Amino acid sequence: MRAVVFDLDGTLIDSAPDIWHAANAVLQGEGLPLVTFEQSRGFIGRGARVFVERMELAVTGSNEAARTDHLHARFLHFYERAHENTRIYPYAAEALEGLRGRGLRLGLCTNKPFGPTRAVLEHLGWSGFFDVVIGGDTLPVAKPDPAPLLEVLARMEMGVSDIAYIGDSETDAETAERAGARFGLYTEGYRKGAPESLFHHFLFNDYRHLPDRLAELS
Ligand SMILES: O=C(O)COP(=O)(O)O
Ligand SMILES: [Mg+2]
Image (tube, rainbow, N blue to C red):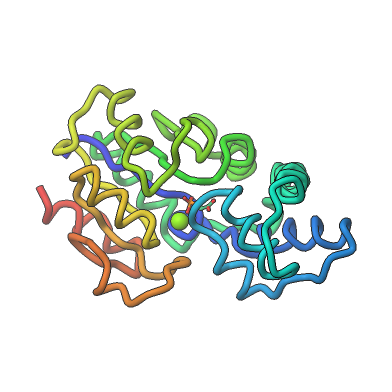
C-alpha cells in the first residue's frame, strides 16, 4: 500500500454540531422552523446541495428549485466559517502522523464543498497535510460516484490497488465498492445502517487500531 485516502466529516472530524448551527442560521434568517441536531446529522453525507434539499423538505414539506438555490447559497455562506466546534476524532491526528511516518501518502476525498474543507483544514492546522484534496464540488459529480476517489488516485499517479479508502458512511462504502478500492469503515461517524451491512474490508472504532488494520490488508 502506498497511500491512504480519507473521507472528512464523520471520519476524521466530528463536524455535525457546526453543520447543525449553519443549517439553523439559514433557517432562522428565512423565518423557517429550525431542525434538531439528529435531523441535521441525518442530512449529512451527499454534499451541501443534498443536505439543503433534505433540510428544505423537512421544514417546508417540499423542494422548490428557486428556494433550494437560495437556501443552498445561504448555507454555503455560513458553512465557510462553520468550524468553531469541530473536533478531530480521538487519536485520528496521531494515526495520520504515524501513517506519514511510515512513508504513506495521504489523500482527502470529501463531499464537503472545497471552500469549507480548505477553511476547516486551516483551522485544524492541517493545511498542506494531505497531498490531494477533492471536495464535493471539485468535479461535476460527487460521491457515491467513484469519480472523485479516482481523481485523487489520478493526481497521486497511483492505481486503485495502491490505496485504501477510509470513511464513515453508506456513501463512502458505495464509492469504494464502485471504484474497486479496499475500504475501512470508521464506525463512530454518521452512518445510518448497521456497519456489517455495508461494503467493507475492515471496521474500526478507534484510530489507535487503524495502522494494524491497514497493515493486515497489504
Ligand atoms: O458534506 C457531506 O455531505 C459529507 O461530507 P463527507 O463526504 O466528508 O462525509
Ligand atoms: Mg463522512
